[in-house]
Amino acid sequence: MSQPKSETIPTIDHKPHKAFFRQSGWLMIAAVTGGGLTYLVHFLAKAKSVDETQYAAFGTLLTLVMTCVPSMPLQMIFAQQGALALATGRERQLAGIIRLAGRVTFLLWALGALIAVIFLKQIVAGWHLPDATGLLVTLPLILVSMWFPMFTGVLQGRQDFFWMGWAAIVSGIGRFGAAAFLVLALAFGATGMMAGALIGVTVAAAICIGRSRDLWSLPAEKFDGRKLIRQVLPLLFGFGACQFLFTADTMYAKVYFNDDQMAPYVAVGTLSRGLLWLVLPLAAVMFPKIVHASAKSQKTNLFNLVVLGTAVLSVGGALGLYFTGPTLVKLVYNSDYVAEAVKLLPWYAGAMVPLALANVMVNDLLARERYGVVPWMVLLAVAYGFTLPWMLNHHPEHIEIVLQTLGAFNLLLFGVCAWFTWGNKAAAPPAKA
Image: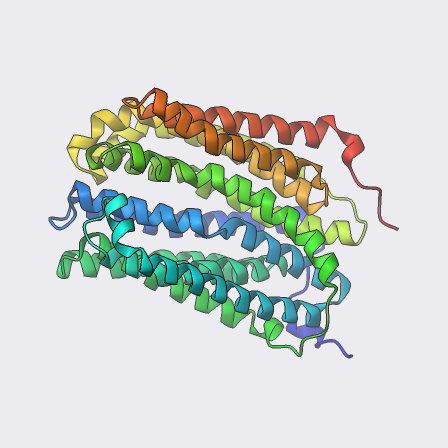
């Protein structure tokens, strides 16, 4: 069958270093702007309708979305498939994959939503939520949060970073604007903050879906399902392990600590995760370029630039956060949070640095189909999932033990990825003919 006209698909810039700095710079601007706008939602913690219980509920529901939605694996799977489709002329097969994934994710979401509704009262009581409304708003947010990274990944794979950036900015505008109205004007509390997230992500997802319409609306061609599974599963488990290490701590801590303890913990977590706003765009631009180069048996040294830039930015950001964090906490949150936040901030910010560096290595390894690292990553994530509650059971009064455990496992992840990147050259696949 004939392929779509070449002018409908953005061309790949073959000046890698020039394009890399331009594109990653724009994504950094977009990520910081969108992330900053999203962060403004936390200023609403000072509103009369958002007390410690409401804010802790907001943090729990937001973490539920991050934990239940494999946003990182979904985005990277479709970034990989989009880049491969452009490199090998399989755009019509990609259309079939996208539409199939849309149907499957909807069915999985519908099943999960049904279970959540059936056990609604138990969930509300177990998580100490003020009412069920926030959870009901969170359910459609989970669905949109699955589709958003899918279509963002398609744009990433075709290297349409311009609209990727605008989607991030629009998401931040929608989140803050809608949440501010619902909380300040209507006193909706945590429910209003989650509704703002729903509105922002929905508008951003609509942008990505519309921008990629020329791909997913193509007549579908049959694709090799077994080959697709071999490509997808390592990304699903590898990036899923990264995401679990990145997001699961709040869900565990919520079980062991009360709302007064969780409110400053959520505040510090929001600040510390903001470090990744600076560094994730570097890996996001690198990934499809390496996939494309690998598919065409081309050489690229973008990884060296990205890992160096990530190290400088993440370490510098962590140090900056250490010195300015107490001031930011006073500015954004209740003054009661400051003492506990100052105690937690160095641990949280420090735990993000090895995770940021490991993320770059994971992007490079999986883009080059060096999947030997994945079982070790999964093993680490499983060990973390069992170790953290064990530590909490033995140190029930020390919330910082959560971050110390997280930091230790992030360092282990960094070590494993570094070994497969530099110390295990034999694991690299042979060059493609």
